Image 1: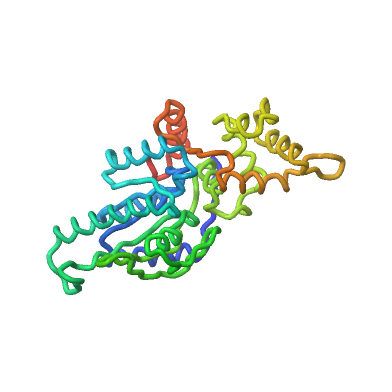
Image 2: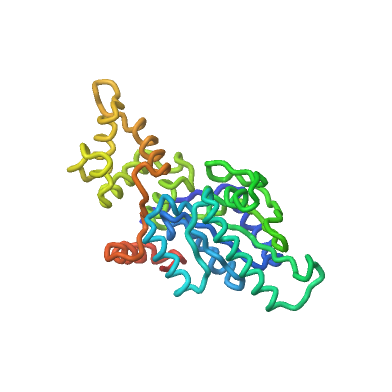
Length: 306
């Protein structure tokens, strides 16, 4: 089994800070990528936050299959007991749904706990911590909630480096934390999915392999035929990538398809939703059951379970 390791020093430090801050926190908001709800779940979180109220938010819901996102949220509620919803952090209606959920959760916590020293009006301040893997949209979500740029957001992994306390609602404060990955991915496909969606840098794995893997998945979902009918009939990722390069006129010396030019374009277009809303990890279909079964077998030494 291939093992992918990518664990920058600042992530180890971030995890230590996260553990230290837990005693200050009432609620944990865990962001995942709606396109890969399984791969974007840090397996360390289940144990770290087992005694905390948790809200799971599947971000980038506009880029994922809506029915699949609903199925994942339903499963998280029924099987794990977490409040869950899929959103697009740039859609204010979606953000308003999350705000309403946070308000209800805060009211429930205040009603269940004894009074403490810090009050706003008649209610104790509820402190929320937002966690997730890199580049899943934590800072963008905070900015959307408060409707101004209070958290630094950038479309590359590992930008948020330090902790920030931010008042997001009356009586509710939020701690933004750096993105935290785990120290190894025992499944190559988990690492590939994270790379495809931009959670780890493109140079950690071979970018041609990443794009080829994506092309195979797109072909399996029928998206190649829909968006690039000229590529129909190819099966292997490198063949699909070569055909894509040829179609776009990305040719090296001698007319050979230039995969190094094609690969970043394929990834950029997928991340921008050019292939349509798509969930790389499905829950509700028969195919998803088979995918999940193979993944569990493959990752038998991984603490994550479906």
